[in-house]
Length: 127
Image 1 (cartoon, rainbow, N blue to C red):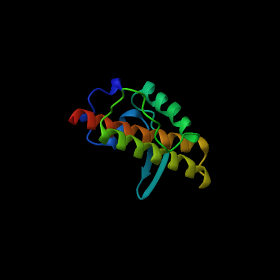
Image 2 (spheres, rainbow, N blue to C red):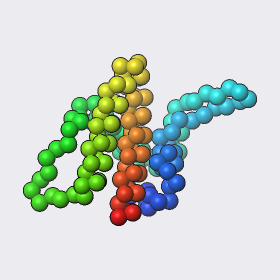
Image 3 (cartoon, helix red, strand yellow):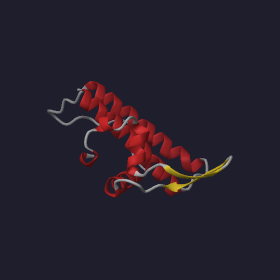
């Protein structure tokens, strides 16, 4: 996420996801609003990394792993991470059940992962 620079330059997680090109395109005319595929605007490298990472949430465990000896992360960040992982795993599991195509579900998971990374980045910046 180094390529994003400071997360504070993004007003919210939605604008960060838009910068990555993980938001749906829109074709509007009058009262008709249609959404298309993702915009693919922004950082191609980070978008690809997040989409690849999202595939791993198909078989991920929603339970946090034990810490290695000597690790002492911030308790608030650890709680936020565990909550985010549970949410991503749950959303990734339920989308195919609703009939969402596996690739579309994966990109939606990648977008949510990007928003979660933005939130972690803001937590770190605010210290």
